[in-house]
Every structure is written in structure tokens, then in C-alpha cells.
Length: 118
Image 1 (tube, rainbow, N blue to C red):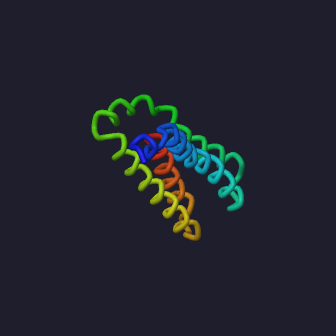
Image 2 (spheres, helix red, strand yellow):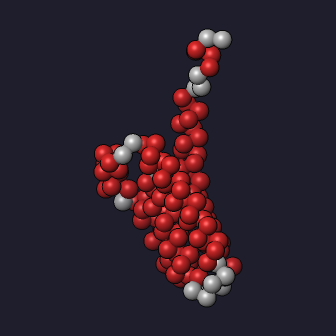
Image 3 (cartoon, rainbow, N blue to C red):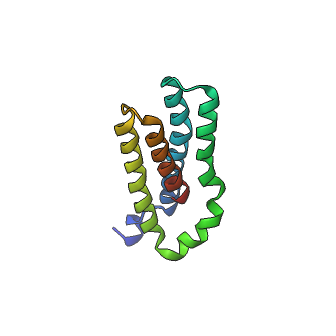
């Protein structure tokens, strides 16, 4: 075997990276609305609370230059994937709690900022 045949195509990495970046976005936007609706929140409250979850993607250009200066892209990707996992775990853990709205919104915010930074 030659060295050339053992290398993977770099486009595979790019496609998988952007797929992994887009999944939390869809999860945050869709899961939050469906989850809060099933928990009995009004449409007005759902629109108010989940509307703020778009903010990290809107202001992403403000902090993305600093992200590129601080560490390597690989370190940021690994760290943000860890935060995404922690966010999903936190949401699952606090759904049955009495104060579910504040805590799940905080974890959805963590997911949103992690996904936007990813």
C-alpha cells in the first residue's frame, strides 16, 4: 500500500464537522419548543423564551475572531462537544424538577452558545 491510499479525503472531515455543528442547532430550536409545549407552557411564553435562544448564532461574529486566537480549532471543537453533551445531560436531568423552566433554559443556552462557538 502506498501512503496516498491510506489517507482519507479531507472533505469527509468537513462534512462531518458541519453536520455535528448543525445538529445541536436543530435540537435546541426544535426540542425546546416541543418540550415546553408538552409541559403546558403557552405559545407566548414559548416564543419569548425560545426566541432568545437564537441570539448566540446572531452575535457569533463578535466572538469568533477571539476564539480563533485563543486555542486551536481542534481544542475548541472537542471542548464545545463536551459542553453540548453536558447540556443535553443537564436538560434530561432537570426535566422532572419543580424549577424545570429556569434550569432547562440555562442548559439550552449552554447548548446554543456551544453550538454557535463550535
